[in-house]
Amino acid sequence: MIFENLEQLPTAFGNDKKAPCPHQRRRSNMMLNPLNLKHLNRIDESEADMITLNLEDAIAPSRKKEALHNIALFLSHLEASNSCIIVRINPLNEGGEEEITFLNDFDFDAVRVAKVKNQYDIARALTLLSPEKELHISLETKEAFASLATLRIDERLTVANLGILDLLASLRLPQSVVQPGNPTIDYILSKFLVDARTAGIHPISFMFQEYNDTKMFRAWCEREKAMGFESKACMGPKQVSIANEVFDVSSEALARAEYIKARFEVEASQGNNGFMDERYGIFIDEPIYRDALLTLERKE
Image 1 (cartoon, one colour):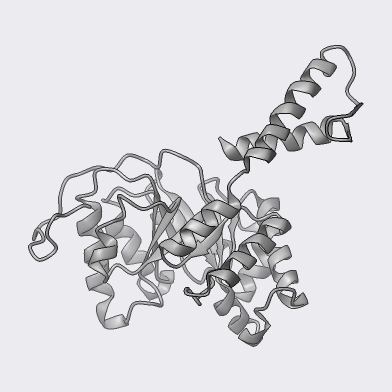
Image 2 (spheres, rainbow, N blue to C red):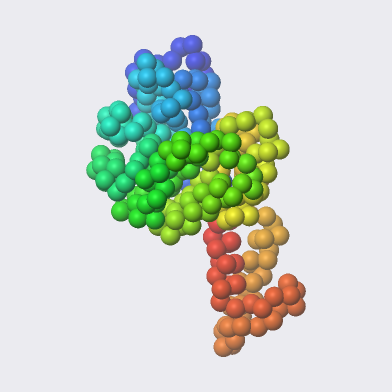
């Protein structure tokens, strides 16, 4: 916990400086409402790989300043966290620019900008953002969906989060299409994944808002992992636990990758870059080797 007593919070910001996120794991990205002080007080104990403190659509306009103050207060007294801490700001022309300017003085890992549409929005955000912080985006508009592969104009743009409900509204599609196996959703997920990877941006799949239906949440995670995703937005610790489990690299996959890496490197040192392997019944060549390296990189 950050504070022992939430009834007697400090009246001034602190001077604590959180170190940068110590890892690159992105299996789970848990959204938190900064008006909920109990949840905010435990961001130093969470099992989520990423925590997003939300200033946007879940916060009523009359309480956005209160939420921003809460974020600043808790961050300024945060000594350490194993989670990557992100602040999701409002659209740039709806208070987001002022929020970035204010938040630059506090230590966290990334700003996530809502409702971006084009490279101009990315450039505006990067101009305002402290150079040591990453820029993440919420992909929620048809304009950004159409141009995602071209949006990475700077290496500080590292992550895109799929806001499926806002995107569907922008495309004038009903939310009822959000069903496993629906061809429209499969297309949206596939295009988002491939375009993000093409641009060098890490894609995080959408938030499943029926937080008590853990069976369906697990089904979505497993389906998205099979598609190639490595990350899922989460509501609460139950979803975080499932996402961390599903998107982790299994011991079997790790053992297979280590074996392929070692076997290929031995054979390659003898001038043989393609050979049959009886243990796994596959033909091992450079593409198989590179995939093994990717698995090992994800685990690290």
